[in-house]
Image (spheres, one colour):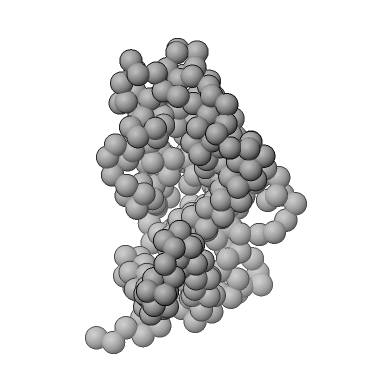
Length: 295
């Protein structure tokens, strides 16, 4: 059976998500494969192909909104807006992410599990490079997972189902054992962070004027991406500074299951505990903001 655009908009979320990803890969692979043959440096070709992939993602989202959902401002629906309020939320997320990760290492230092070291390269370089990398990752991943993917899921499922499915997919994409529990908690936290910056209800801006069946369910959440983008970037930024700068040395007598396998705090019990605390705090904050139960 031919899957036309009118049929696609009425298809279940897994079908729509699958079609979108297949089209994205069909656009990207013919460009990426020759580049991998031409560019010898692996880091350079990875950066170039990822930039191309994300540019094609943004173009496809624009097409998706105009021709599938008849919603030309789909990025706004995802929660991407350039406003003073969202800027403050990005800064708040950055501060929270940095404070959380450095608090994690500070606790480990108190117990004698890590030893602080001088940076292996210039500290200003760590800060600048880490900021650029983290902002890029925070923007790209949050627009994909908490923007496009979350919106597709919200069109079909209840908020609690959307929360857990989105967080599980996020964790699976980033890896399984041993960091899966921490990544699942992080995914939950980032969805809650978005919901904390919005309103309950599926209404869209009047300028979009979509067909009635395109609206979100009445108990869905619309929120901005500023806080999750900032929080995600803050965690990546602080981890980049610590890891690339080799700022900590792990005590040899402490087991890796506690502090994290391969120097990754997300792959240890202490990281899971801290992300659990962060997730619980975000639940309380989000429920206070939207005045409804989120789990």
